[in-house]
Image 1 (tube, one colour):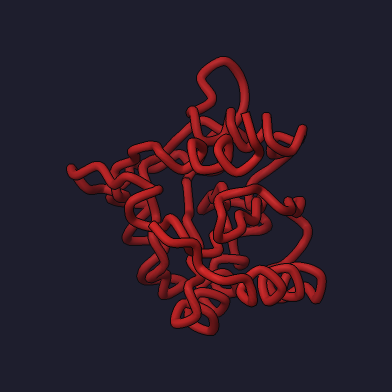
Image 2 (tube, one colour):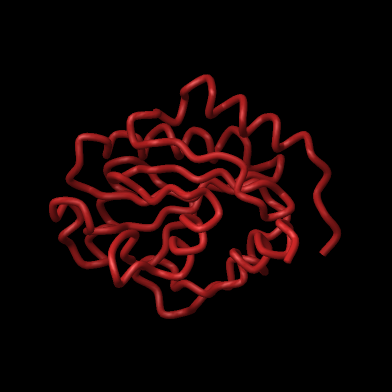
Length: 171
């Protein structure tokens, strides 16, 4: 199976919007965009990265970029709240408007399918909250960045800008 076919399958998954009832198919909603997938947590030393992630969303969304946030309580219980509480916190504290999805597991036996595929594609699973995976317009995972890499880090921004130059594939 080719890398692109594998990668497109990576996005062909459904997740509920945070505190919502309706599932969103990631491929249908975001296929062809440059995507930054991030596992988030509200009570973590990296939580202020929400602000930088939202800044990336505002800066690049018109060019076909989106951040997709997936809250997870897998690291030292740093996302203990219910989805409605998480949504309220992200919105009121950090002004998050980028798409946030249901609370998931990103490590261990209960790892959600998206994160299983991200790990399979990169050989890297999140070591902590706010691990970032960059997905190209064709659906291939082109980079991943550990938690300590801030959203405004030069290497991350350069990788996003490089991928935004690629033509959007026909759907």
